[in-house]
Image (cartoon, rainbow, N blue to C red; front, side, top):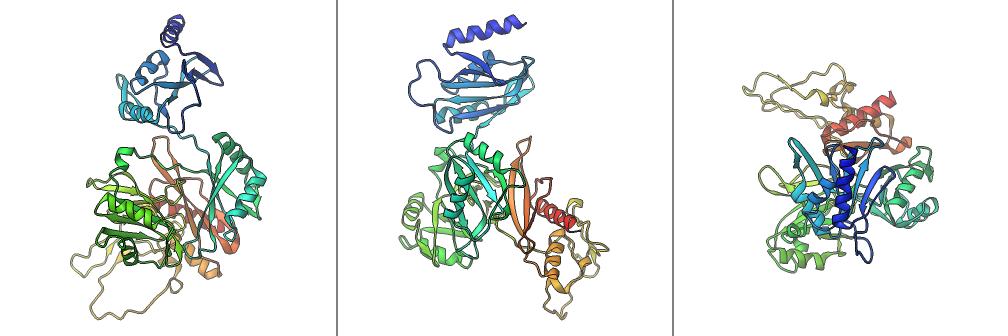
Length: 463
């Protein structure tokens, strides 16, 4: 069997003229291919292949992936035993070939009942640095990062939504290569590392997903960021309609950014060129084409935010409804449930999912009652309530902060990819008054669950 495998690989090498070398737990086919001149292919030319059956090798995989285009390099991860490790990286000579491979071969049935997965391989060179002092400028942060790490190319800092003279407590640091970023992350990741007395949170920035050029050619929605919180949708409509009155179809503003829908792509492009960098309510805005991220169940196009400057995607715009909140959103609300009073008389219990319940609140009477005509309504606030009236850890944590005279908790959203490809979420909670930050050791698939879990983690630490 071993000799037959070797014979098949030798036949492949002889047929294609590619070399093959095994090193560091991987077998490299090509890189460069025969007759290649010049620099290696640019970013975006490589795909990741997963769920490969362990008994399949290059003699079967290479011809399959050659259907999409010319291969620059094929790297199959190998076990010491000689089996493959179930995944590989295929680098094409062009980005178009890489995209074609995804379209043709993702979920391809390579053997009966065995389906491979193919997606973009991300050569990430950007780190997310959290828990930074909010009074530091981009120049100060970049200077410090260049002192402690090598290969810093740029630092991306965003102003606070409430005070444009301050940053949001995080930055994206761009390095000259993935290797430089990985070395920096290794140096910064220990929890003892500090800058300006702050223990840093260091994560890989999740790159923004690329959208194919054909789809982008049809986009007629602009993404506008760095807005003032008090800027209204009507103001945006007027500003973006100045060149051509009536060109704006609708506007949706969410905290410090917005989506401007135009009737035509030509009007959107003209507005992008004229409005990018302009001042609105005293704040210089950034304008770019919104990137579609898919369609909802009704077939409507969704647009992903760029709140992380091609770093972390922390929001999704869908049918004028904001699904994920921005990373700086620290808005706290009392937990709500769904109940219908059919006869207007009897209270009915609320049936919240068990994972949304709060283990720190006791004796909660989970009922709703009819609001009778003529009832006297008195303005209330969180401090006037009793702890057992707060049905979520999020609201109870805010209550405790008020009671102790602390600043309100700030929630910073992070995401990671699960083994099944699902996006998983976790919140870091920062309480500036106590100079402390908390992050649970679990992630959630649902945003509200992630926030509730983060608050529960803080309460547990605060005891």
